[in-house]
Image (cartoon, rainbow, N blue to C red; front, side, top):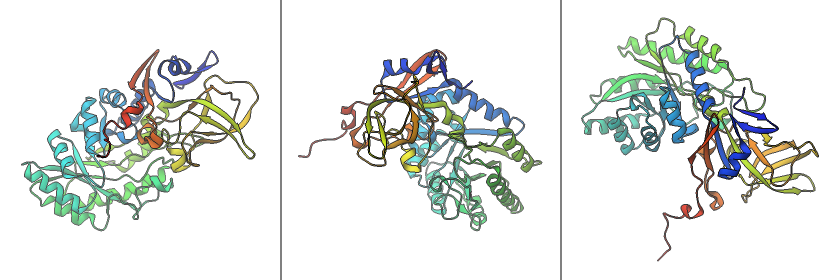
Length: 414
């Protein structure tokens, strides 16, 4: 049964009615199911049980400390892209030895903090980054563990903004230059070459791009072995999609079978960087209808959440399911679900057939990934609170911001 289900005529998160959460914590509010997060991780890890592996949650999907701590207790590692994310992992009790550090713009302070913490690996994405990391590590008297993120130039057939493995993308190093970079890294006293990495995109629902990219990656692994550079791990990234509307996500058994076939006879550990697949369907955005506005061409349901709370629809034209917390029977009309932000792009859902009245609560589904993580204070709007549901209890895991919080670090001009 889904963690978000109807019981007694109202939508619940596990055993807690969402209406009760709205009364206690207000709206808008992000609500996460602990059971869903745990079940998603266990299913992912179990599907890969026959492979030597390390699952590193791509925490940019949802960096709340409660979410991180739930995963850390299950033995999950973490894929980070900033020094701030490393600090969050450590604050949540994550093991730095299970951390891989991705990203194209790591600065020297971030590198030093990661070396001091003792992370597993840096996913290096350019020659200048390699040179900087070598200098930082040498200055600290350490050897930095390195994997190159290699760009396989494979089209993942997803939205252009979340496609990361094409040669025109900013990520990774090209196949033509990768062997030379590996040889250069292997000659550096302060660098220890440990792996190879790829990440071709996000919300991918077809195995074919993975199969093509992995074949290219493993050919490079073999070529490097011929040069005497033997790698400890192969990082296949993340990007497995979930169901928002009518998508057919890749079955984990098929994913594991493809990987097992490709890696047969190879000694390397596989590293995975799932994000959305672990948390995407584990959260909803709870919002309240403020006004119903009948227009000449369209009808607008103005809610108290906005594009600053959930950017994906405005940024990607992303589709999220919308459900009434306490459904009405009639009258049903077609609504544009919009927020109060002064932008025409401020919509959360288009053309939804719902029976609505002012004050009704709506749950915007599949909002556990790239939702609160991408929120902002645009229009001087405080960010939503976050609530973690554990069976029949609701825990406030991030308080709602106050207006005065938004300018606490500012000062009046002299």
